[in-house]
Length: 171
Image (cartoon, rainbow, N blue to C red):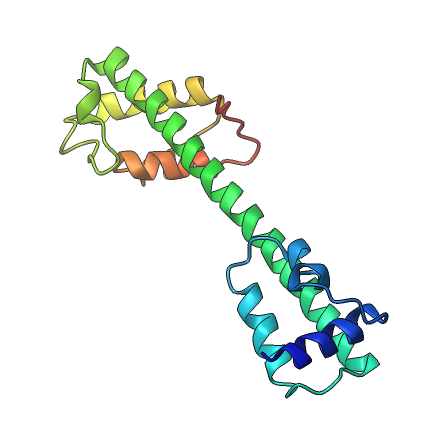
């Protein structure tokens, strides 16, 4: 961008002709959305260096608002993903403790990919005992038709993780 173009943008956006950098145009408030700068730069360049009209300025401000919302949503999604990972890790720790205490199975064998019957060698009665221990530990109910579909440790983690009202303390 030429210096003249930048000054015209500044005059148009501020209304007083004072030169301000891109952060003053609202980019600082946009947040961490990775492509915000490129989107704004492309939009400004597409206007060919001409002074911006009032509706152009409003459109640019709308773009900044949308980018800010995208950034906020992205941060919320990242926080949710981290929470879910931490929650699933805590659930796995509690499941491992059940297998160690109730069945004498070494903790390192209880991995998400482990098949409860084949890899961890639980029998039918052990599977019932496991369901009871899971219900007691997590304060949930596992209907028999659901228990019959939980073959791997990961399936157990997913089932428990998605139970409504379940609260796992992460700290």
